[in-house]
Length: 324
Image: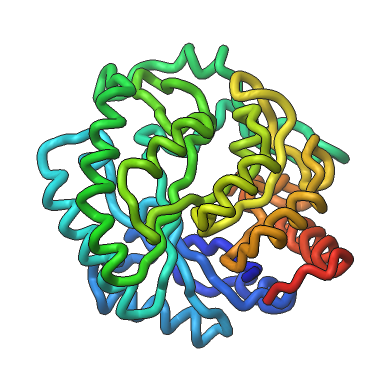
């Protein structure tokens, strides 16, 4: 397995140095223009320069994560989506040329969503959480009501359009489930909310490039049987990327936890990933904000990642699970 870290943008800072000090060699990055000041990765020179920045700072850029460009026309099926899909295909071509062979993507029009970002965890650390009761009070977006059937149609259209390019250029498309996994938010349907939905998504196109980001915490939120899913999707070769985190609660009402303070048997999960032969990237995900941090980037502050990465490495060393 490849221990990796998610970088927002391409500008080196203290986080980069801390990752090198922890022995992290592999970078996953979101390179949207608002983070880089450059064109999105459909521009070859822009993506190439970002890869070179990571290399100069001791990292191999092996994947991209999140929306690298404005995806709303694609996700909502609006006029102009075909133009955006063509740019997406060019991005996949550029990734293949530069040896960036993983794309963690989602199909959430309302995005990763929380109703609270300041819930107290152990020792006063702050974590994010979600309450359907609070979420249901939020106003509709400018797009009004968008039913789940429409979102499924849009995903089907998108994945069938881009998958030939992903396969041609050797990019693994790793689909992230909806977080939180609730049927709708602010009037817009959310479809990837349980294991059956993920199975349906995978069934739309048969390709070795078509797989999953197994965001373990989101599957816990769904109430799914995590060991069974790791075995099922793993044996199919569909787990391309792993996010390790934990939660307390259910889809309707939950909060994040420290990696060692939730209901999941983390050592057992790592053993299962090893048993299925998973050798892709794995990263610590959604960490608490700890003492001295501002919580300006809730879920992604650094001290929690220092804890999470160290905890993961300790488990893997104890279990003699190989990683790089």
